[in-house]
Each structure stands twice: as C-alpha cells, then as structure tokens.
Image 1 (cartoon, rainbow, N blue to C red):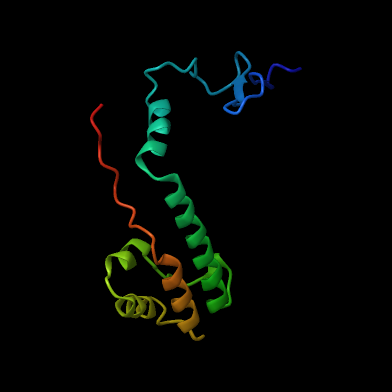
Image 2 (cartoon, rainbow, N blue to C red):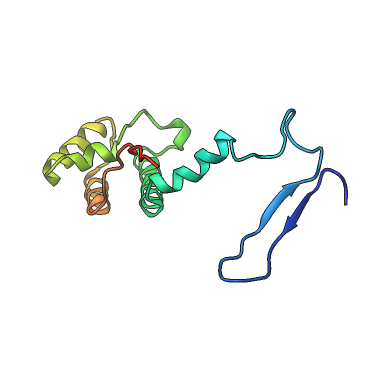
Length: 141
C-alpha cells in the first residue's frame, strides 16, 4: 500500500456500524493536523443535520431538480442556456391561495412561448403540504 492511500476501518457489523476513513500520516492539506474537538469546521458539520429536517431538505432538492427538468422542456434548452427564471418555493408557500400562487408562477414564466398551465398545476400539487424552510434558530446548549 502506498503512503498516499487511505485506510478503512470498520467495527464488527452491527445495526449501527459505520465506516471511517483516515488519511495516511503525512497526507493532506498543508498545515492540516489531527482534528481536535475545538475544530470549528467539525462542529458546524454536526449542527447542520440538527438545525434542518433532512427529509424536508431532500424533498426540496427533488422538487428543484424536477423544476429544472420541466423548465428545460418548456424553454427547449439546456439548463445553462435557460433564460433567468426565478421560482421561489418559500415565496409560493407564503401565499394562501392556489390562484395567487398560479399568478406568481405565470408572471415568472411570461417569456415562455409554450403553454405553462400543466407545469403550474403540477408544481402547485407538488408543493402542497410542504413547509417553508426558515432560517434555523440558535439553540442554547
């Protein structure tokens, strides 16, 4: 095994087992050393999953990917070539009625030459029941 490879160690297979990767000694970024308990990056990584609901984030990501795919079809182009279209899901969730949401979406899609009614109807159906992602609040420890 070369000095630049990584080692893998895993405890005996249990329901809660995890795989850990450790860099070989001397490999890594300049100035990097062992991770200590005072490392701010390590602390932030642990807090992210606590502050946000992982399932809600996953649903949001799937929805955003679907929106990009649909807009690519509507505008007959790839994502990089697409005109600037802003669809703010949180903004739509703040509106109380589907009619107002549909109006906002139609304004965003004003430059689209294809019919957008099916897209708007499907999007409104997909956001039904979703929650607005608010900025996380600090919790005192």
